Image (cartoon, rainbow over all chains, first blue to last red; front, side, top):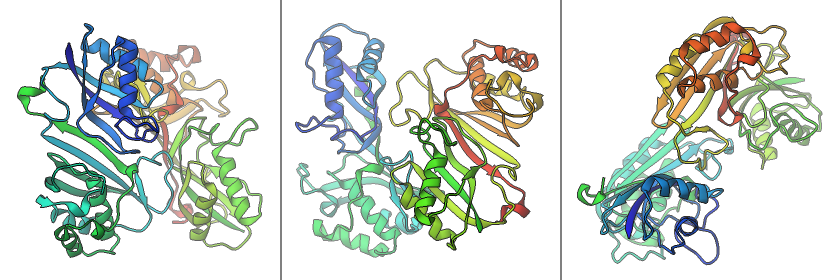
Length: 252
Length: 252
C-alpha cells in the first residue's frame, strides 16, 4: 500500500461539493471513480477541506491509498486522463508517509473570496465570483475584518449544520484588497467552521455597502448568535487556495 | 438620432465570433437584438475589432445609433437586462459625436493571449486559455517577439481569408511575460491582419518549445509566405483588451 498526496484544482459549478452525495456528483466521487478505473481498487479520497456545492479550489490537498504498484507521475497522468470531462485537475501527486493525512495532518487552510464590484453582469466569471452592483468601501471592510482576527467564538458565522465540536476558532488573517472591480477577501486559519468564510464575507459586504458600521461587525461577533448574521455570501466567489502541513509529515 | 459608444465584455465560447453569421449566434447579433427589443429600431452595431469564433473581449469598443430619446445609463442597463443569458456585458455606454466610429476612428488596438503552461488539464479556464503541457522558454519567446516589432509585411501571419488591402502593418508592442504557469503575450498595433495575433502567438510557442530558434522567427517574417507559418494558436486564449481613439473624437 502506498499513500499518495494530491494537489487538486476544480471548478465547483457542476458539483454538489467535495463530499460524496447520494443526490448528485461530487469532486470526491469523480476522483475515486477515476482511481478505480485505473487500479480496480475502491479507495477513499480524503481532502483537507470539504467544500460546499459551487465552491472551487485552486490547490485542494487530498490523499488516497493504492495497493497496486504505480509511480506518482503515472498515477497523476492517468487520473487526469480519466477525470475528463469533469473540471477537476490533478496538479501534483507524490508519495507520502502512511500516517500523513490530508485532513488531520493539516495545520493551516487558506481561502480567497472574489467579489466583482460593478453594475454590469458577469460573463466568463459567472459562478466564479459574487457580483455586487453597489459600490463597496473596501477600506471599511478591511477595518471590520480585523475585528475577527484571533481566537473567538464564531457561532454567528457558523452554519446550523456545522459538525465541529466547538465554535471557537483562531482566525490568523482576513484581508480585504481591491484591484479595480475585483474585491478580494483572503482568509487564513488552522481550520474553519462550516460556512464561516462565506458568513464573514457576507457581513463584510454589509459593511462595504454601508448597511453595517464597522462596530456592527464586532457586535455580531460578540453576540455569538447565528440570528445576528448579516448575510451569507453565495458559494460562487469562494476558492480553497491551499493547505499547509508540518514539514516532517508532508513527505516533501 | 444619437450615437452611443459601448464598452463590451464577452465570453467568446458560445459565439461564432463578433460578426453576424447565418449559421450561428454572434456577439453583434445579440446586442442588435437587445437594442431592437428596447427601441423597436433595427440598428447596426459596429465594433473596433471583428473577433473570431471563440475569441473573448474584456473591453471591445462599439457604437450604435438610436433615434428614440434614451439616456446612456438607461440604455446600458436595458441592454444588460435584455442580453441575459448571453455572456455579453455592457461595461460602459456614453453619447458620442455623430462622426465617431468604433472601427474607423480607432487608432490603436490591444490584445492579450493567455497560455497556461502546465501538464494538468484546465478546469474553469477551459476555452479561456491555451494549455501547453511542455515547458515554454518565455525569455526566448520574448526575444523572438521583438523581431516582429515595427512596420513589416506580415503575410506569413495572415489568414488566407484576410480582407485587408495590404499585408503591411506596424506592430508597436509584442511582449511575453510569465506569472507562474501563465504565459501572457501582449500585442498592440493600430490594426492587425486577420489571424495575425494567433499566428504570431503560434510561432512564439514554437520558439518557446525549442522547435524554432529565435532566428527562425525572423526568417518566417522575411519570407512573407503563409506556408512558412509555424502554427496558428487556438482562439481560446485570445482576448481583445481595448481600443484607443483620438481624444477629440472619443466624446469622453
